[in-house]
Image 1: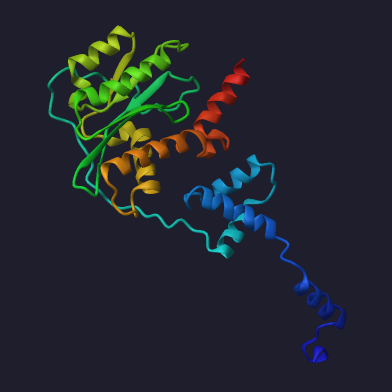
Image 2: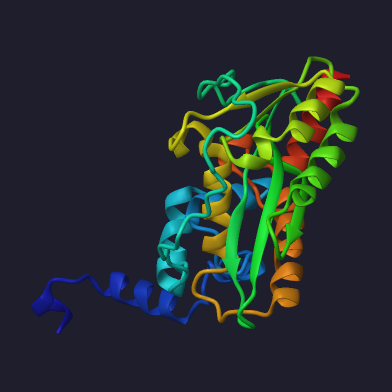
Length: 273
C-alpha cells in the first residue's frame, strides 16, 4: 500500500509515532483558555498575545490565533444599538470653546481629562446613570458617579474627587465635556475656575469631539451589559463598579505597551523618577 501511494516506510512510522505523542501545545492551550476565561471572553488573540508576553511566554501571535481558532475561543458579545443619553438643553449658561480640538493624546498625566454621562436600563424599570472622569493620558477612570437621576450633584461628586487627584499636577489641567446643561451650570464653571482648571467643550451634536469617552462607554456596554440579562439597579451598580476596577487595573491595552491604565501610570512614573 505504501508503494502504491508513494510514501517511504520510514515516513509512515515517523507519523505513527507522532500521533502517539501528547499534544505539544497542551500547556499553551490551557494558558490561553485560562486568560480567555479570566477576562470573560473579551480578549481577542492580539490582547491574549500581549498578556502571554507580559507573563514571559514568547509565542508568535499567529500561533495564538490558530490555537484560539482550534479551541473555538471567540467573543460571544455583540453590539446592540441603544438610545444615546443627551443632557443638552440649549444654551442655558456658559459655553466654553473647544480647547482640546480632538488632540486627545498627551504624554503628561492629569493634563487632559474628559467626562460625559451615559444611561442604562434596569430590570426593575429604573434607569441608571454613569458619569466617569477619564484621564486621556492613559484612559484611566479617575472617579465616577452613579445615580438614578442625572442631577447636578451626581456630576459634581466625581468632579470634586478628580480635582483632589490632580491638584498637584505638573501642568494646568483641562477638563473636556459636551455642552450638556450640567457643564454649563454656574456651579460647575465656578468650581473649575476656583481650582484653576481650564474648561473645554465639544461642538454641539458632535460626539467625535469626545471620542475617548464615547469609546469607553461602548467598551463597557459591549463587555458587561449588552448580551446579558437585565439586572436590578443595585446589581448593575455593583457590576459597573467591578468593571471599572477591572478596566483600570487588569484590562491591558495595546497602545499602553500591553499594560493596564494603572500599570502604565505606575510604570511611567517610575521611569520619570
